Length: 282
Image (cartoon, rainbow, N blue to C red):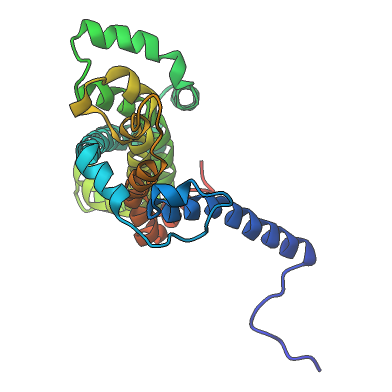
């Protein structure tokens, strides 16, 4: 008699899909690995053909050039300020909107959700010229608010959708119990609903911050002053008309990836839990 194993065997088609997924993942990681290795190579090693796999010897000169000669620290500070301010605006505005769309029977809810979905997929390049004219008229070019307000507007629809799904996954009986105990609507939302919806709120905050951190077109168009440029714009301006410092670009790109990698690696369980919460409701 065959002994039952504790692990269920996958069908052959699913095994093939897993193998393809692993190979695709390796393919996506290869450029990232080459980026990290290239950041520690000297210009001579980067110019070799055929290319060498490992730096010999490793050097930190590319990082020194990025931070000392190119002023990369300022770009990091600007990206951090813009990303955090935009994320706070999105979460602050998105929580009441998501709660209203998910927990109440407001009129026109479906139309609002469809409108938010359309806005979330609208091409950014189509609104850059009118936004530029508006910001110039308001004398907001070359300022933090020139990026914070558009970033918040473009990331708010997706955040509302994510947080709405998280609110929908919370049993209504919890709110009803709090109301029976005499809690007001505001107290019920703050002390009962929001703690249960934190995974979804956290995911919305992470996705918003990452989107703001890597956005390029609006940052290039609205902030041309060197002391207000963000990381993507700063990296794109490395070098001159006759030289492209690949090593410096690789080093700066590695540093720019660190916040995103740290967030995803350390908080991956929250991210997965927040994305899956409310997935079967809507």
